[in-house]
Length: 72
Image (cartoon, rainbow, N blue to C red; front, side):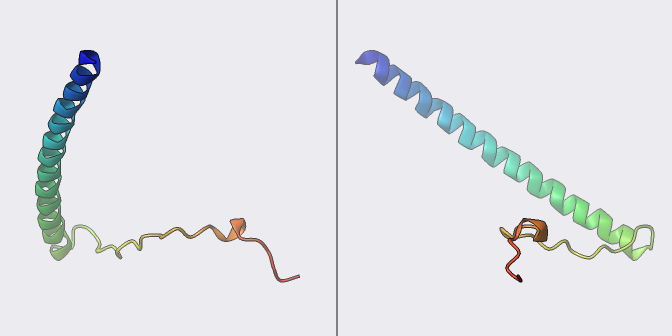
């Protein structure tokens, strides 16, 4: 049974490593996002780049072509 215990301990260790890596990457992404927003805001204010409309997120909608025709 020690082989299973060893595998479990190894998996737990790797899990903790991955959690730490994800936390670090989240921090990096948040930092980059803030920098991007600041720079793009400046460039929009200066008229260098156009202000884009926010993209609406699709929530599980199927394209119209995939919806069954019930009109007939």
